[in-house]
Length: 469
Image 1 (cartoon, rainbow, N blue to C red):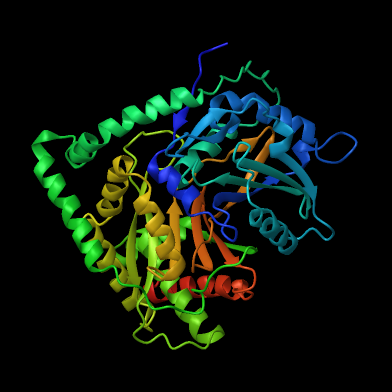
Image 2: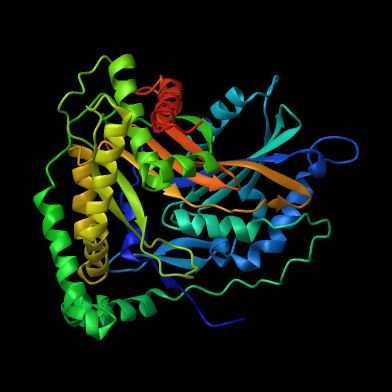
C-alpha cells in the first residue's frame, strides 16, 4: 500500500463550496443525447451494466472521480482524499422517462435531477442514464460539483470519458488501491508550516503573477489597474424580477443555433461569436422583461457575469482556473445592430483594460489570505445584485464523440444558480451546433420557455438585420 496522500483545494475551488447553500446546489453538468440502439441488450432495454463496465474502464484517467472531501483540523480547509468505500453504482444511476418520452419530459426529469445536492461524503459526481427518449435516443444527465471543474475542464473531461470513434471492446479496468488519508497530526503540522509561510507568500504573490521578468512591471500595473476599475464600478446592478432569492428547485430548457451561421453573422458585423451571443442575450432579456414581465427596461443597469478562462495554452487539469468579466448589456436599446455595436465596444474595452485580471489576482492572493474574501463574496451575493445574469460560453468538441458504439447527438450545458440569480445561461459548441442551456428557479421563472423563445427570436432579428440568411 502506498503512503498517505491528500490534495489541498485551491481557494477558487473552495469558493464553490462556500457559495453552496440549502437552496443553491453548486454543481455544473449537461444533458447529453445519444443514439440508443448501440447500447441496448439483445432482448431490449438499455444495457446499464455494460455502461457501468465502460465507465469503470476509464476511471484511472480521472482520479478525482474516486476521491471525496475531507477537512484539515485547524483551518477546516477542504482537501481531496481517496474514498476507501467507493462504489461505482452509487454514481452511475438509471431511470426511464414515461411515455411519450419527449424532450419536454426529459427537461422536467433533468430539472429534478439537478435540484438534488451531491452528497459531500462521497465523490462529487453523478451520471444519470435516462432511457425512453423518443426518436430511439438515450439521455445522460451529468452532475459534477463546481469545485471539481470549470467549463474548460468539463469539456476536457468529456473527451476523456468518451471516444472519437465507436468502441465495441471494453478494456479491463486498471487495478486501484485507495491511498490512506493523512492523520490529523500530519495535517496539523502541514497547516502550521503553511501559516508560517503565509506572510511571505502574500507579500510575494503579486510579483510571482508576472512570470516574465521583462514584463513584470507592466503585468503588475495591469492587474492593479483592473482591480481599481472593478472596485470603482462595483455598485449593484438594477434589480429585476429575475433577481430574487432562489429556492431549491430548478427548471431546464435549451435551444440550438447553427454555429456556422453565427460565424457568418459575426464576420458580417465585424466581431466575434461571443459578441453575437451577448448581443442576442441583450435582445432576449429586453423582450422577456418587457413582454412577459411588463418591466420598463429604459435606463436600467443590467449586467452579466461572463466567465473567462485563465488557463494557459495546452493546460489540462481538473479544478478551476477562471476569472470573469462583468459587463453591462444594452437592454434598453431597441435596434439589434445598435445593441451589437454597444456590446462589441464593451468587450473590446474589457480586453484592452485586462478586466479579467482583477478577479484572477484577488483569487491568487486569497491562496495566502484565507477564506475571508470568499465568505464576504458569498454574503454579498445573498444581499445585493452585483450582476443580473450569468452567461458562460465554452468551446466544445469539434468532432463527434461516442459512448461505446453510440454517437453523441447533442450536449446541453447546465450551470448552478445562487443568491439572487434565478436564471442562468450556459453555452457549449459541439460539432456544428451551439447549444444554449437555460436554468431557472422553478417558482420564480415558471416562464423559462418564454425566455428561450426570446433568445431564438432575438438571434433571428440580429441575423436579419445583418443581412445573413
